[in-house]
Image (cartoon, rainbow, N blue to C red; front, side, top):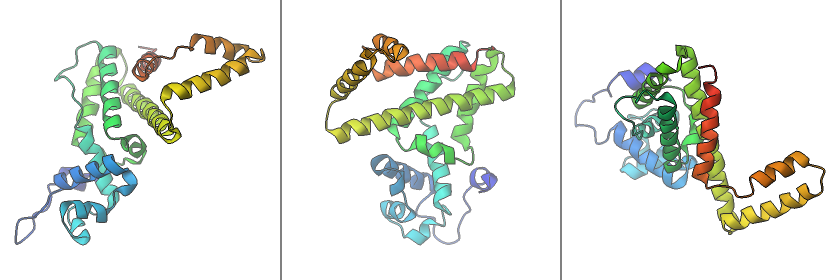
Length: 233
């Protein structure tokens, strides 16, 4: 995949009638399909059907599914709603970016699993990177460390959202409420801890008996993540 061809050059004009579709509309339909049915449902045939085009004609706009995925990832990166400029409080700004990422990944559940396959950085993605590097400028990190910090932060958010989504699917499949499952898990772990052979686990279970809401858990772990990533700052 040539990123210059994908991002830096406009779509090639075609002779004759104006094109009936464009990459932006095709990408939006692919994102909508992935949101509704999962990334596996996004095939060139399925997307062509959604826009009312023949499958082969779709290839004149997007050469393959791998390219379409790049377009989709960059498309949803445009969902970030960030202030025009960083506030100067880099920890708070970094936390806000992470919360934006989490919200976007929940709106587009296919995104966390798709990110490892990303090969290029489109304009929306680059804008988020630029903003984050500006956020981290006061942190005392060099340019490479700032890039690595953002990569690690994004990896943390994606991993956590994958866990949250998996828990939601497990609860739905079990046909029980999250409270029921948590109570059953707590009863089991307390019985294990009561045997006295796992004292450290018993202590941890005592502390986490009243587990907070998912948002609070994310906030707590995010705070630790940010402090750990920038411990030398």
